[in-house]
Length: 410
Image (cartoon, rainbow, N blue to C red; front, side, top):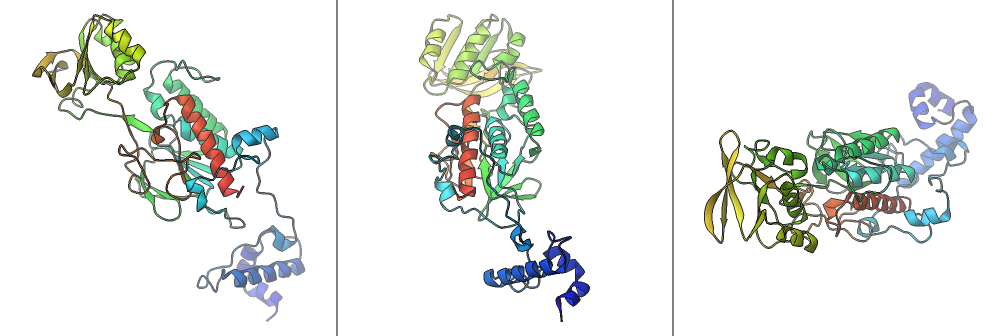
């Protein structure tokens, strides 16, 4: 049977096989069909290898056309390429990249990069990935991008650049940038599992999201004390931020639970509105020396080390906090409790699938590669030596550059 007869008997199949050959006539179409069939036999793809499924679409070369370059446009100068890891000096091959190979010539059925988390690190990675020519999708558990920015109730003094405002305003600016760049962000899509094998994330709704590479940027959440009354009195005396709620505690007795910078800073903020503060530290103080010196010089702050909160008590609002320490177990009258007990990483969904430390933070190498091939991580979820918005933004950009170099084989 001739090719013309084949075209008549299976016009749909011919259209699937040679979508780029319209208008070129039957002879070019025949050449493309012959080359596609030969390639399928050579690589064991096509109907024989897949039990009768249609052959893959031929690339542009099947029609005698030049193949478009997959390399993204160069950025300004050679120096810019080097900074991003795309120049001769940057290779971006860490643990996550060693087993990865760019899938050249395959039809794009999945995005290049799936970013899990749309906080500063995830947003920066997505924006840079788009600049570097990677098709990118973003999953975000919250109703909007921003991550922990939604809990910052002051203007970050150490954030350089054009973004200004309190945390939620900075989060809104990031969301606007992602939308302007045309990056798909699926909100209310909490990650539930990192699947084995090909990089894929299953979300809480059961959907499966696959990509050539995955970047974990799920950040951290505030650590709870997990004591009776903590959740019941939230908003009625139990608070997470003296910056936001100190006006409601003016002139009152307040307990601050925590031993780090945040706890000591919140205690000092409360004294500015006339509060008497008891700073409850479970072990030894971990705050910076400057904060410890300022607290020690403030007569309205008492520090109780080796002491922990057992319960929060009250009626319509907080009236006392139950403590246990060197003084024994006792109720301390208080109108409020500020919880500043640190953070925990949002890695419950992937902790058993890659290497983490004892607290659950993802372990990464110098190129932000994890122990899983083609899976990277950036931002607070990696427990960087310095936590901050600027650090997260930078790590997201560097991780995107490393991923691009691996996927493009550079």
